[in-house]
Amino acid sequence: MGTSPARADAIQRRYLDRIIASTPHAQLTAWYYTPMALRFSAHVNFDVRVYDCMDELAAFKDAPAQLALLERALFECADVVFTGGLSLFEAKRCQHRAIYPFPSSIDVNHFHKARAPGEEPADQLTIPHPRVGFFGVIDERLDIDLVAQASSTMPDVHFVMLGPVVKIDPDILPRANNLHWLGSKAYKDLPDYLRHWDVGWMPFALNEATRFIS
Image (cartoon, rainbow, N blue to C red; front, side):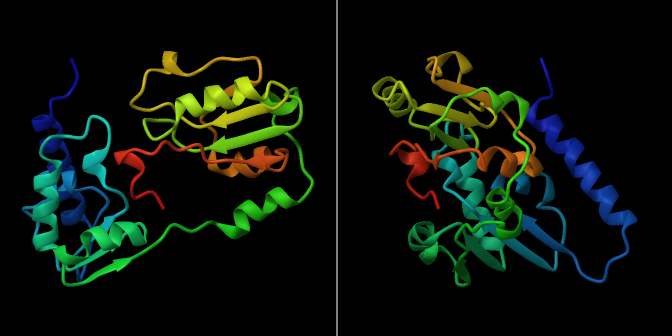
């Protein structure tokens, strides 16, 4: 059940055409985060096409088979390409004449709030210290075995894990009294969690999906 890829493309194509037709413009710029968007936008005569290549998406779990082919097509028609880090830039630099590294950064003003005293979210309030925290998408890039080993090796340390579980079965996540999977949180609330952590960590696995992580 659900919407087929062909129907999804047709719906998005109609929606895109409707937006362009109803919006006054002197110049049309397309900013692509995924080559898959070419399937419903290639027919539009954009003045500028930007490919924001933030990761090696073809290496991700369940990546569409046509993604690599569409990326080659996007490289051919894009006017400028940005890459999400220096390692990805080195891997892609020969594929386009105007390609620039654009490493990840941080919203300093937003996350600096974690340095100031403030309320603690209710679902974290009763978790003992010391706390080690992570926030981000929980998917195949996370080293599940490392998380399990860390919680087992340090039973007095509590691990707070924030983020949606995507592309992996939630049932495979390790469970322990000192391991707390609190789910997805609003961006605005993240500093309230962080200010009450003792340490932050990024337990990423070493695999194809993390090879170009920035």
